[in-house]
Image (cartoon, rainbow, N blue to C red):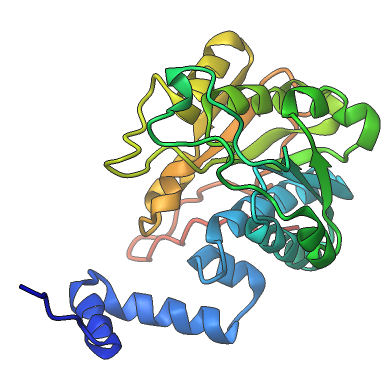
Length: 295
């Protein structure tokens, strides 16, 4: 028996009916479409393309401004077709314009797609060699500011600091899919401290998945993350718990922050100067606790 297909209008109606917050969804979509409000405002709502990219880059720029850094870097590991890197370029430009901090963009990729899996930890039941191959010439023609770092990350990353002299890294997007490649890419957090910010917004793309991927803590990106934490006494990758008080989005569970407790600038004060909670007169309403803003 052939199942009836829903028209586009009916599909929209069904999505609206099943959406737990249809008014909010419609509002966010409208703000995104017409680019209403400031860039900071839209990033806060997730009313932008690839909101996880925007969030990490924007907040890295905010932190850089508080630290007095005029320039930072952001990195994508796993460029593939390049749509993410193009989005990263746009968000870097918008965050730079809004914060006054210059932002360099780097994209690491083999250029050949996924390599052959090393063993079960690379999830060969889910990934095949050659997936996500890059059309390098076509991508380079569309990029405006990004620097592509092409080759095996085991060979390109150790020389990255000496070759490119990157400004302090403030955001990293891990999308190498495989355990073995991700493990190698996490060595970015072992670069000299002058090439890293004390806290780095870090996104892991492949840690939730579906019933075919069935990601777990003993394979893939999750295993690479866990092993990094186990092998580093003073550098830890921890969930971005600040996102727990926001309207939940799937990418919130993929956003982490890499803390280098021994970074020479880790303890520099970057929060609000006045955080005193003063007593109010009887019968008066307590003032709202102020939130930190870009200086």
